[in-house]
Length: 218
Image 1 (cartoon, rainbow, N blue to C red):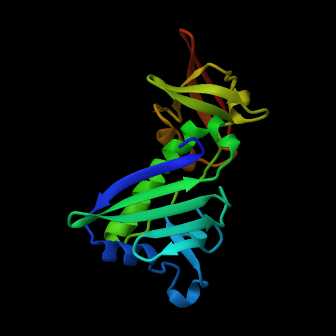
Image 2 (image 1 turned 30 degrees about the horizontal axis):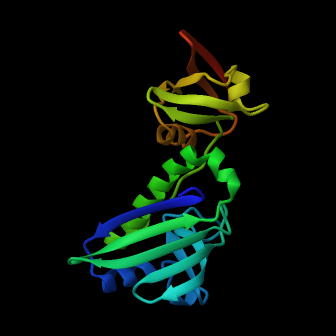
């Protein structure tokens, strides 16, 4: 999807069981959840809704379709639609998040990684009834990157950020952070989530055939 993300998977639950798992309140019981609102596991939220993102019902076809508006940042105002279809003895689930706007095309590679994690956590809730913490946002690299076959290439360096303080430039290939080889966005996020703003961190990167190193504060 140009303006969003879509995933489809089959779970070993009947459509009735899958619908019950999808619409079961997860915010401390039914009395704690406002009418026509749902806390959707897997999607990042805020405030007291650590279990997921608070969403408001837009369209409801019991047993088949639940369409919602995401109320929590990040990406508040986007729509989440979940469609259920019988698939043998199980249920085919299609989940779509859309309505991001034209800015998405510039960061879609990064968001794609996050989307895969969201879908995995959402599926975990449906299949096993378990809710796990979402992405923990840690310190910032101070640079945008894109995935290549040999690692993450720097596409933009933010003013006064870690990337600039370290000496990174557009076109560099990030190699390591905190001594850990960084090959993809998920690895980068994990290392940053375990770091704090102000930490002195060593990074290395390639500029052509030159292997560069620096230590700076995140």
